[in-house]
Length: 402
Image (cartoon, rainbow, N blue to C red; front, side):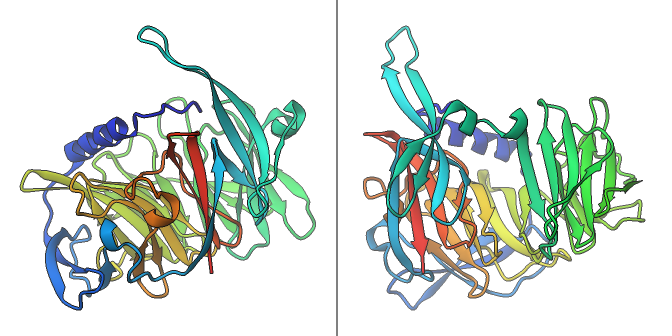
């Protein structure tokens, strides 16, 4: 993936415009904002995408002038990896990165030219080692995706031979044995329905394709969902015995295997992501209130019930990412109004609090926004944030939490 430097603002504004086109007016709930050093709370209208009346939760919004006040997470230190974005976490201390260097500056008639390398970086020591072509390539030239079951006993593995074809396996993590799963698929979206079943939206070159319930022994059965508002499953997931997806009208729906008719949960859904333990669903909704477009981030439980109130609000919410232990959710908020929420935030599920991360990863511009997805270390105690950098084109800042 090539990075287009200096165009993040244009990209954000264009996505906001698309979100506004998708949005519809919704009913109102209240967002409680607590400014740092102020015990007074103010009430601000916010969208209630679930159509329910939530309980009130305090949302700590930290402005640029006093960003270190009122934090709900404790940060030990921050590490900087210049000119690099994280591809994957190898271990708690090591990451595999793509390093980008400019080899020729752009002119009025020519685009700049970049060189790319794959490196292994020790986050704690800063030691870097460039990987050889053999080390940098994926095993057997496949791109591998692996999802571990809720009980940690199995994983569903996909090895992509090309853009549209994958070989699927069910892996026993106790023995290391992999069982091939028959059947072609063209998409990689799915999730663990429970500890014994992985549900896969296999996709197709024409139509929606099959939805497969894959057992840990490698066998599967197909299940059907009757929904005329679905042309293809672009957003799809599973948790606690339920299947979740969005339709062409941006409605989040849920259905249980064996039931053909889905239940509508939330309208105007821009994106959703299910926590690894299956307990929570982070939902970003597109809104349009009195001509102003925006996006709200809310937390639902696996049954689709709204948990408290808003945790994020701005023109665009992007890169929501759950920590592996489901204890925290990181996300970025872009707001045209600089006094609003801007930058990366971390939501803590235990306390229900939201903390602003910008001072830790951007001393130059407090509201700098990530240009690659946010990434968590295996323990969930480290968060990688990649932003534009004047000296190094891009830089990844790894925040260490207590």
